Amino acid sequence: MLELANRFMFEGHRIAWGSLGEGPPLVLVHGTPFSSQVWRRIAPWLARRHRVFFYDLLGYGQSDMPDADVSLGRQNGLFGAMLDEWKISRPRVLAHDYGGATVLRAHFLDGIAYADLTLVNPVAIAPQGSPFVRHVAQHEAAFTGLPAYAHHALVTAYLGNAVARPLSDDALSIYRAPWLTPDGQAAFYRQIAQMRQRYIEEAEARYAPPDFPVRIVWGEDDAWIPLEQGQALADRIANGQLIRVPRAGHLVQEDAPEAIVAAVLDGSGQG
Image 1: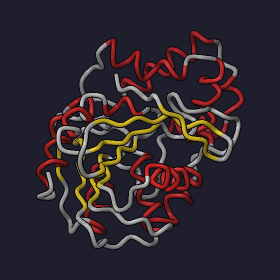
Image 2: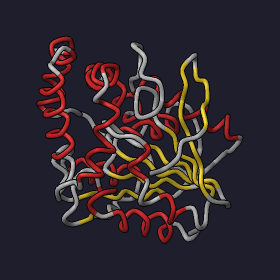
Image 3: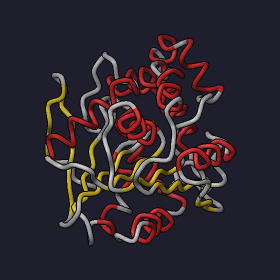
């Protein structure tokens, strides 16, 4: 498990973060419905050559889960505030899923520059959202009020759909635990209900090849986001180059963590 021993106050809310290693800064940003623990098998390898920073998004993991805005429209502001807190500029960045959307918004909307960017199955092309996500968004209150056993089963099934191979009991427990408290149950459906297409479209309208290297890693068996969206993003910001990972689902960190380590350490010539 990664240790998030530090707390940063962002607009009145506590954000949990940690770091490992020494060297050039490398920032890891997780997606939904996960936490920074998606990097627990990856960060120690990257920390051999970098100072690796990781944090839990607002509304996730060990960070506060307020009854407030935890949408993509707020997360890029948090990302920029974390960089200021760490006193780093133009870091290397590795981001997954909604973390990918967050750092793309931070660059294309807020002007934050990176040394290089590695994206893993990012949410970046409209339309977004599975039928499950769309249904929850329309019935948030009903899902928030589910009996604990039903919520437990739903979260378990949802997480299981993120991988091409069954999650280990330990991994499932790690990802599921933050959502199983009363506050966590409300937070789980809150973050889904706050998913808005416009947050993707705002950044997508500005996509163009940036002035730093971009690598996009894609689990070919992603059941949440079609491979075609990965290729469409690569065509717009990565000169068409897409690193396809066979026998890996949306959560490549579990199915093929070595593919991510290789992309980061070998892809830019800085590794």
